[in-house]
Amino acid sequence: MKIMKGAVVLNQILMPTSVFFINNGNLSEISLKKDEWISVSNLNTEYLERIKSDNYKAVFLRRENIFSHAMNVLRKVIYKSSVVVAIGTEGLFDVLENADNCIINISDNIITINDNDYVFKDFSFSRDASEIMEYNLDTDEICYKPDYYYNEELSYIVVNGYNMARNLLPAFHSSRSDYQGRIWNKGFIFPHQFYDYYSVHTDEFYNHLRDYVFVLEKIFSLRHLNTKEEEFSYAISKHYSYSIIFSFITPIVSEKVVAVLGNDELEKVYNVFVVNSPIHSKDNLTDTSLKNMKDFLTGVIGGTPNKENYFNVYHAFDMPSHNSALMYFVANMLSDIRRCVINVTTESNNWFKAIYKHRKKPEIY
Image 1 (cartoon, rainbow, N blue to C red):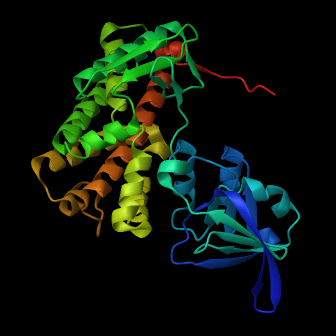
Image 2: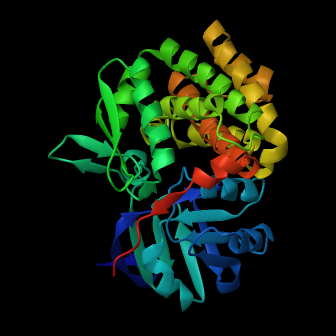
Image 3: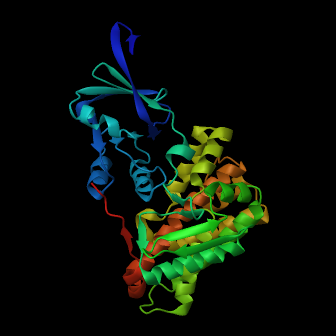
């Protein structure tokens, strides 16, 4: 399709994927020369250092789950900068390689290169940010991490933990490990079920999550053990039992926040999370993050108004008080706190380090 832009006739090319912009502020469009952008295949340390150098106005990221650990690190890197990031531009990498300039039309999801308008689909959190899972139609089971193959010792701990989750859920739930070490779950298993239940039973949700903080504190306090201890392995199992109730609902909650409050309010909540996340100094900030989250959840449970609670614990102003925004903030914060607790523990505990390995499924060409 050809369209007119002023005196220029442009080809319009419909892209099969969606694009997601971050850090665009109030910008609706940005024009770039070749040396003002960088195309990034994956967010490794080298690319993050180059982005941090502040020599670029834009970053084109091939693809990345916007709730991944790497994305949280990227947000921290570009926080308070003017670098715009376009995520999901895999189909343009060869074109960008040979382009001298481009225009990013953020409002309309269009990237213009060499008289071609590349039109992307609107981004949907529930469609484009959900994790890929596997479902077995014969057994009605779901595998949350289909490319994770746990060793026998760790799979026992994970299965034990997932089976403990039945005490937190309103219906039957069971887990098992197959001969390959993959974990399969049956019953009350889908992310939308967790969200539908806990978005109504919010008292249960936040009480469970505060209990989870105590479990994470226990794990963190035992991190220097170097042998298998029953108290420690039990705490790790408990960690998995609580993780299941919030780990996979973030895309659904995000969609609800955008529907009710809009993208700007979602970004406001996310930025407060990024500022307070322990990811960039897990050795120094994890203890404080655990305490802050425990205090914050205590405020939620005790009925402290959301805006007051944000200010008291995180010194954050002008935060949306809507319940979906609260759930979004807590799920993101706990995801990073959990990650830091487990990473520090893995580095400190020789026994856990030896078993905490997930063999990834090899690519087949």
